[in-house]
Image 1 (tube, rainbow, N blue to C red):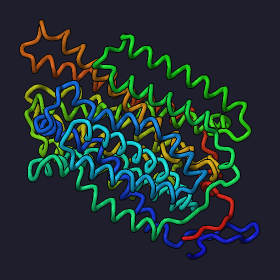
Image 2 (image 1 turned 135 degrees about the vertical axis):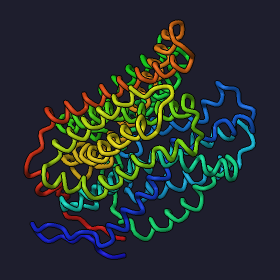
Image 3 (image 1 turned 120 degrees about the horizontal axis):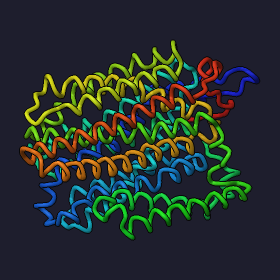
Amino acid sequence: MQKALEKLGKQKPKVYAHRWAALYVLCGGTLMIVLDTTIVNVALPSIRQALHFSEAQLAWVVNAYLLTFGGFLLLGGRLGDLFGHRKLFLTGLALFTAASVACGLSQSQALLIIARAIQGLGGAVVSAVGLSLTMDLFTEPGERAKAMGIFGFVASGGGSVGVLLGGILTDALNWHWIFLVNVPVGVAVYLLARKYLPNIPGDVAARKHLDVAGAITVTTSLLAATYAIVNGNTSGWTSFQTLGLLGLSAVLLGVFVRIESRMKHPLIPLGLFKIRNVAFANMIGVLWAAAMFAWFFISALYMQLVLGYNPLHVGLAFLPANLIMAVFSISLSAKLVMRYGIKKPLAIGLTIAAVGMVLFARAPVGGRFVTDILPSMLLLGIGAGMAFNPVLLAAMNDVPQHESGLASGIVNTSFMMGGALGLAILASLSAAKTKALLPSSASPLHALTGGYHAAFIAGGIFAALAALIGGTLLVIKKTSMAHGMEPAPEQVTA
C-alpha cells in the first residue's frame, strides 16, 4: 500500500500516481454496464424463440434490468460514500459478472429475468461509484476535463457499440454470448481494480447512523416510478396501474423528504439540491437523456423497420457518430472546457444535437445512408461529444468530496429516469402519430415513418430546452474551473 495523498498543511494534496490506470479500469467497468442496456435488444428475437417468451413476457428481459438499475442508483452512490468507493465498486462488479454467468447459462424464463434484475443492481452500484471515483481522482482542472471526457464518451457512446457487438455475437455464435462475453471482461476489470483503484475509506462516523428509513423510502419510490415508466406503453399511461404506481412513488418521495429534513445524518442531505448547478445540471440531464434515448432507439427502428437494415448494419450506421464522439470527448471537449468554461460548449453542443435530431425528421421511406442518415449522425456525434463532459462537470464540480458518490448517484438517476421516461413518451407519441396517419398514408411504411418523424422533432425540442437551460441558468464561477473541486487532503492507499 502506498500513499497517494499526504497532508501538507495548506498546500494542495499530491495526486494519486496511478490515476490514469484507475480511470481506464473504471471505464472498463462502466462500458460493461452501458453495453448491457442495448446489447440485449439485438438478441431479443433469438431469446424469445429459444425460451418461448410471449411478446409481453419478453419485455421483462429488458425491464428487469432497467427496474433495479434505476431503483438502486441513489442508494449505491451513497453506500459508496459511507463504506468506501473501491469496496462498493468491487462488490457491484462481482455481482454484475456473476449475474452475467447466470444470464448466459439460462435455460428458463424465470432464471434469465431474475439474473437480469441482479445485473441491474450490480450495474447501479458500479455506475454511481465509477463517476464519483473519477471526480475524486482528478483534481487538476485540465486533467479533470480530459478524464471526464473519456468517461463521458464511454458512458454516451457505449450504447451504440452494444448494438454492433450484439449483432456480431448473435450472428456469429448465439444469444448466450451477449452475456457470457462479460465474464472475462468482468474478471479482468476486477483484478485490475484491486491493483489500481485507491482505497479511500468511507465516512465511518456517518456509517454508524445509516438512514435505513430514508434508504427504504427513496429506493421503493424509484422502483415504483421505474416500473410505471417502463410499462407505461404496455399498461396504458392513464391506467390504474401506471397512475397508481406514479402516485405511490410521489407519496413515498414526500415521506422521504420529510424523513431527511429531520434526520441528523440523512441519507441524502437536502442542502445538496440547493446548489444551483447541481439542480440545473440534473434538469439538463433529464432532457438530454430523453433526447439521446429517442435518437438511439427511434433511429434504430427506422433503419430496421423502414429501410430494412439488419442489426449489424444498424450498428455500423452508428459508427460515424461514435468516432466523432470519441474525438470530441477524449481530446477536443477538454480543450473547449478549459478555454471557454462549461456553459458555452454545453449550450452549443446541445444545440447542434437538437439540429441533428430535427434533421432526422426529414428522412423518407426510401432513405439513403449518405444523404438522409449520415448528416444527422455527424451532427449528433459532434453535439454529444461536446456536451456530455460539461453536463457531468456541472453536476459534480461544486459538490464536496465526501458527497461525491451521492451526487454521482443523483446525476446517473437523472439520466436513467429521463431516458426511460423520454423514450416511453416519445414511443407513445410515435405510435399515436402513426395510427393517425394510417388512413391517409400511401402505405403503412409512410405512416410508420411519419410517427418516427414526430418523435425526432420532440427529441430535438428536449435537446433545445436543455441547451437553453445550460446557456442561461448555469452559473459557473471562475474559481470553479480554475481550481476544480479541491478535496480536503487525506490519506489514500492503494
